[in-house]
Length: 260
Image (cartoon, rainbow, N blue to C red):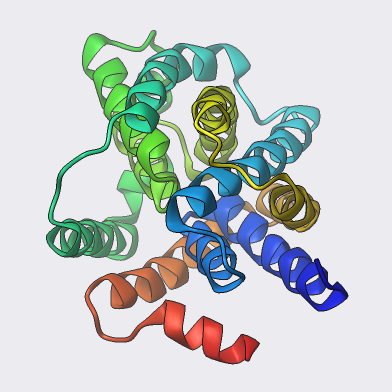
């Protein structure tokens, strides 16, 4: 590995960790870079989980230290996500990827509508958040775990939507719970990829150094600046991600062209 590759991996890790902690979709950056540097797509998918594991560990530590993370409630919601992630990592789903990506983009854009025009929906519901998770909530998080185990890209959006709209948390607490749930299921998904020899440790650990920095900065900013700041970061990232998924531009190509 050259020093230029090391720098690219660390910088990419910082961006990925920052975006993933505050919103989601940052794995588009890391996966693009891994493939650009020569990793097969399946190995890139597995290698990406190293950075995800360490960035979420960093964020969970920061959110926990600041007393904004409900570990017990997150663990309840994380159990079905863990089960789902194992299934998602092990099972190859036969699906029309282009149709799937467009469907995700539409869902994300609908999230923007509710964030901008129905802001009260995203302020959380304290009464709902205080209740023990019901079977419907657990099922939602199982499905999200399946998706997260299969491919990490964009799972943060779905976790945020479920934590706010279904579980009743506000955006800052939802962000903290999001990274806690991802931390719970990622080791299991990573083990599946390790077992199938689909992890490049040199690339993964180097990239993870940047992930940790980005996650630390983002988690502190989320706490200090509050839900309003998190909301606008989510909106901006969703717009960029949706444009890519709808084919308005190729974010991966633009990103890789910048590296040349």
